[in-house]
Image (cartoon, rainbow, N blue to C red):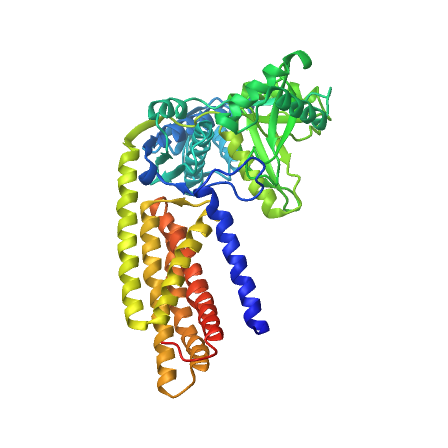
Length: 562
């Protein structure tokens, strides 16, 4: 065997091992301690059943409330300047603030206040006598709308995580709706109750009696002694935190509790968590928070800025002023999002410095923390617009029909290519089967969710794969017709067909990428399956089929193949 063929054989063997590793969990339960891939392929709502919910978000109500809050703030600031003013929200969208004063001098003070303190959000539209009309910038209103939807999605996701649902779909739908799909969920009533529940945000001091490492060691001992682990046998995060604190209650000082932060490099809390001992007698509630947003420091470094209301300013100022140098944990539903150090007293407004040296990571972390801070409660009332329950029997029927359609299509293709291309058709059929196997392995490795559109994408992949083989085999026939030997015809056929196959697959990949980028739910699933199918098609139809033909030529002593 030549060096080139031996190297390709080793590579094909490695591809086979990859497929086995990632497909094995779909067919058998793996033993404890198995360190390779353990998660089977996820199935979507249309296959395994579940709950489909659509919520309307009262965005207008929240925007109106913000405008009224700003109006009260402007009236209070004008009063401090000695100006007695009537400040009211106006307009259909409540995006105009009308200020009525008693004199032209007062009007100038009010105009100066808007220019000095509110120029980034308000623009003066009209000044007539003793009346000023200031309107929110359209970009500001749109940013607020996106923040409200983002906050609601974050809170709903926190609620849904309690169910342990694999790959839930929680996404904005239109301008004021949120789509929630929970595959495999059998209790939609409980889901609705939990989704509408208010998230709880607290600022709690990190206790200094124990280091994080000491707390983590104590938790590990408690897990072993009482045989429980996060994520094992339905142990959700909320149940886990409650269990940890119950087991260790006698060992903890008074007014203390244990909570966890997800490690920076961990994708899930189960994969990596950091334990903290928190004080429960010094917290400031997140419902006193007025706003939180991403900002940038003097040198462009990302920071998280936040602002409290009137009552929150006093409480937070007292808490931070008395504990300079200590760490303050930002806790949402007992999950610690960050535990920054208090550098100085914070009166009403503050910043959280981000520790990452990577600007992109720091910005992503900052966006997450800002969203978590704003998500202390549902930002707007939710109105259930739509509810559907998909039974698993319907999903099973869909799978059966999808399998039947795929098998019939595959059999018809195999019969045709074997009849028309003889031995080459057999090679193409084997490559086609390997293509489907490799595609499922790739989807499993990516943690993708298989839906009915995904099954359609797999069927389409079969057609594209055989199309590549047909192009190659026709080029080989052309080379043989010119009198070229079989081995050289195979080599030239693959080389000459490569450009056509590459171009057609690249155009398909571009279309699939558009579906993934702009689509959502089933459309995105179809696009992901299609892109993965294109990659496996290029691998099996070009590389593995070529390898199989070279192996056949080797064992037939380079004789002509039918």
